[in-house]
Image (cartoon, rainbow, N blue to C red):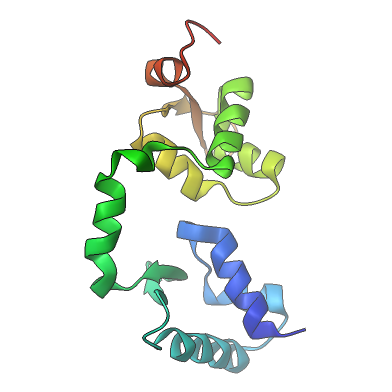
Length: 159
């Protein structure tokens, strides 16, 4: 197995949550030197002008980020009304939240089988979900539910 490819996939799956050096070492079962080498190799790959992403180190985590020089194009996407279409992953996440609210992000991740942090950020930004409060579980995770905008978006009066 190609550990560099696995690391790239891991960084994609965790999205904005990123991975710490310890997580990379534990998941790939490698030492610090090999982890640093893999990250360095990926960073070098992403420096190519044909690549649109890079590895950023933010808040003690490594994560995939976009290249700053492409920002004007990303802005066009965000400002384009057609970008209001929800992806299948966003629809899946939204359906889980609507059906199970109030629900924590961890429970959504568990149901989907992948990290939902990116999808939930998009849904929060679009006003389709909101924070309802905090769970009594250890760590007091945030509980999420749908909004009135969700009902309007789908032409519903109630869930």
